Image 1 (spheres, rainbow, N blue to C red):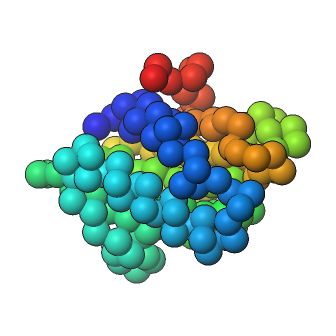
Image 2: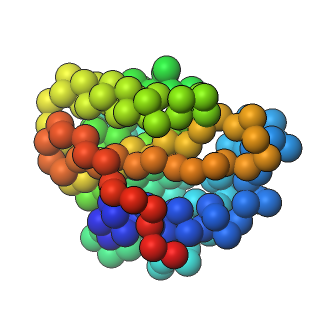
Length: 171
């Protein structure tokens, strides 16, 4: 599964399951649990086995690892975009084919904040050196509204370029 395929499926599922992960009505721990359940349901629907809280090569913990045959996807979900350095390190240390980092930025000036965060992730990846596979950064807004208004996604393939995934995914 490529970064683009993963993001399209994620976008569809978060759009379809708005009530399950509506941030305004959930505390941070409740939202984290709801997102973990949504991701697990997504993995199982795609035929992956889910392993949670697995130690990465560098010793950090990963929120989820999805396995299907020889294919692995590792996922980190972090609410505070200002403290994602550890998650980036954990993902880059893992040999999975796809690394996914989900985080959130303020919904005021969302796009500019998302691009700024993508540039920070690019710098953090550069400090790690290279990594194996694809890196997908998925960014949602902290919500003052009733529901996440949208997601932004950036991906990199075996280097430090962070390129935006164009347009909204087809549903």
